[in-house]
Amino acid sequence: MSDLNVIWTGPAEEALKKLDKKDFGGVDPRKWHEDKVKNFKSATSDLKTANKARIRAPAHSGGNDPNEKDHITVTYKQNNKDINSPKGGAWHVYTGR
Image 1 (cartoon, rainbow, N blue to C red):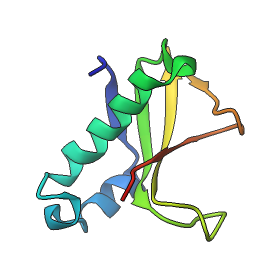
Image 2 (image 1 turned 90 degrees about the vertical axis):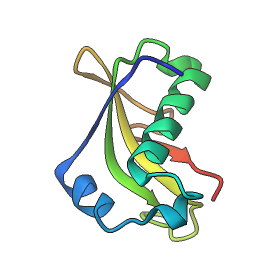
Image 3 (image 1 turned 180 degrees about the horizontal axis):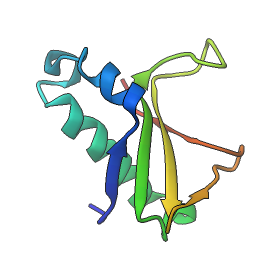
């Protein structure tokens, strides 16, 4: 797994408190999310230089697109500069749930 500093925004931290490990295969929800974010970074060439990830929203479906599959909303950064997704802005890390 990559060496990536993962931090949570205030709203994401609040949402995390409401999650239960039974919904994440018995894994602690914080660890589950951070592992997904780190693995996605390792598997995505555009994020090769990222050294920080800010989880903006824990796993959820919908959002701007009500039909969007379960994903984590993340901003990846290199030296505090955003690395935009191909669509612009934050990345959606699909969870497979």
